[in-house]
Amino acid sequence: MAIFCLNCGNKSIGGKGYFRYNETSGIASLDPAFAKNQSIMWAVHQLFNTLVEVDSTLQLQPSLATRWEISPDGRTYTFSLRNDVFFHDHPVFPGGKGRKMTADDVVFSLQRIVDPATASSGAWIFNNKIDTIHPFTAINDTTFQLKLLQPFRPMLGILSMQYCSVVPKEIVQHYGRDFRRNPVGTGPFSFGFWEEGQALVLRKHPRYFEKDEAGVQLPYLDGIQVSFLDNKAAEFLEFRQQRLHFINDIESSFKDEVLTKAGTLRKAWEGKITMHKHPYLNIEYLGIFQDTATGNNPLRQKKVRQAINYAFDREKMMLYLRNSIGTAAHAGFVPMGLPSFDARLVKGYSYDPRMARKLLEEAGYGNGKQMPAIKLLTIPIYTDLAAFIATELGEAGIPVQVETVQKSLLLEMTANGRAPFFRGSWIADYPDAENYLSVFYGKNPAPPNYTRFRNSRYDALFEKAVGENNDSLRYELYREMDRIIVEEAPVVPLWYDMVLHLVQHGVKGFRPNALNLLELRRCTLDQ
Image 1 (cartoon, rainbow, N blue to C red):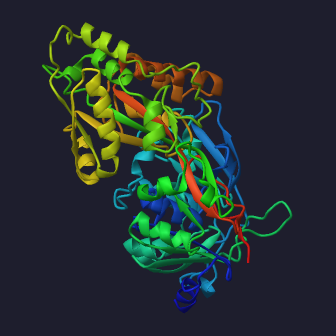
Image 2: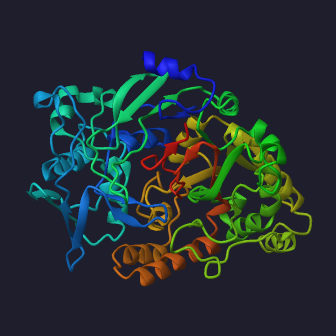
Image 3: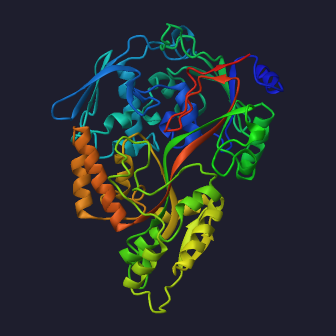
């Protein structure tokens, strides 16, 4: 604690080789079984490893597994594991030294996710996918086998999720639910201490298995320090004073000070900091609840939903409200960055108020007939966005009333079907378009199917795609599904997101990725 406090008092970057960042939302748990949001995922990613992982280009690479084989029927995955992976040191282990990881640890870790007693927020990842009798098997210490009910090509992507991190059985059993604040894994950093709401310190794992191309052991850093200032304005001020090595996005009140409308650094900041901007697998959208789109509700008509998509200027929205951080969504629901994305083959909506009015007339809202007002639900940080869209829709003849509610309430309302028109977003859990298209699969509940969209052709294509081994054929099925979503318009795509990182000049080897995982294994700090 004294080391941490001493380093916190430093006025500038450098010194001990500890990477410092802030987490405004706090960290609820350090147990990977509960890695349901970015703040937990970032910390868990430092402490644990998975069988496979996603690289900076969204390709799946070996991690704890060295290779894998998939049976001809697509239902059995056999993984060969590394034999040089050690858990972090801990007093529960004999002699206090971390033991070697084996296939039994993989079996325990994945079985723990689906065990109702764990109540993992990630239990859904294996729903209706894994064998009901023997899904996870340790063939020997270095061979693990996974069996599925039917072929599911995105399974490797699922296994890269932080939920699937490997944990040691004896430590989990020793701590029980308190494993959340006493984590032990195989990751590049081990647990130091955690004063919840104040500070989290992670330290370099001295027996970490990965090495760089020159044979130097990773990670390079001595450790990581996380602070918990609870608002983005205070975080930005700490970054400006060089007390943080990077920040993820900028608090809105400072955005125009740092960025031009074109999304570049203003001259006053050039040469002082580095900006990283790249595609992020997240789509922002407006959702339209389908089950209640009946009776006098104008949203029951497809032409009204299509008119909404034509009636506002996404480019203007990005320029003036987003400082060009992101790309206007003129294709489907699947965002930029995924291999199957192709705006030429999935054409969405562009700004065309004339077409919007034509569709409204065809829907029966012409010749002076007034459409009843539609209520748009949003959360406070998106109030300006919702007001802009409401104004543009109003000019096209679609009256919209914006109602702002707290995030927890909106999540509850969308899950319970009490939000006919709502602002939403979908961040990738793993890098496959199936993760987005499952949002509209008719057999899925809410979440993820918040709109309650049902379409028999769509469902048939979805079921065919997830079992297709040929990537090119699977991607075409994905695009055909996305074209159905564009046509039926259960959602209004707004923009495909970008990650914006502001980074101090002394930070090297800090590599962004489209999943926005915090990757620090190869990061170094100038002294």
